[in-house]
Amino acid sequence: MFLTRLIYASTIGDNFSQHSIEGILEAARCKNMKHNITGVLCFNCDYFLQCLEGPRADVNETYKRILNDDRHHSVVMLDYREIDSRDFSDWSMGYVPSSTISVPINLKFSEAADFNPYLMSGASAYMMLKALKQSVPTL
Ligand SMILES: Cc1cc2nc3c(=O)[nH]c(=O)nc-3n(C[C@H](O)[C@H](O)[C@H](O)COP(=O)(O)O)c2cc1C
Image (cartoon, rainbow, N blue to C red; front, side):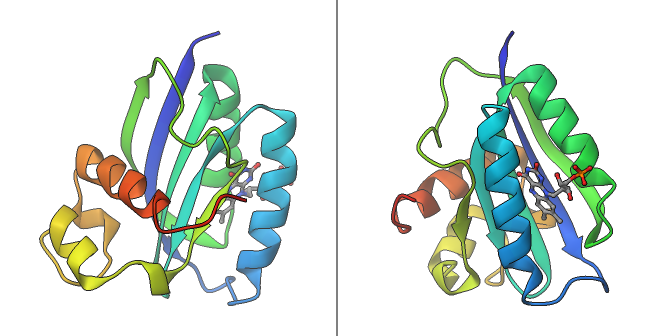
């Protein structure tokens, strides 16, 4: 089964409360461990940016479930490709809170000072997630 990476952006929905992030992460980590999915989730008050990596069928199944989740909407796939190795192999689902996403990081990888993943190419989103990984302790 081919190792695959998927990156998407989405907008936080009305059914999302600040407490939901804990629930999302707990469920995600539990399910991802069973399906050999690793990755990272970035979140601010408006948007999500998430990278999923793992066996192609598992990435696709996980993305399907995520697409149907009413805690977010306007899901846009930024990147989907086969990969030779994982970048987040030590994270069943790493979490990057908004406090970590600084103005310089946003300016480096997008056209805006605020975090808005819709304004990023797939390549920029991927580079940003890798840069943010350096700022967050391994789980
Ligand atoms: C922003 C966001 C990220 C999510 N990330 C994952 C994930 O990485 N893995 C996962 O299994 N579920 C993730 N979920 C939760 C799924 O959408 C879904 O609720 C969960 O997989 C349970 O699905 P089920 O009730 O059909 O079993 C995420 C949900 C949201 C809103």
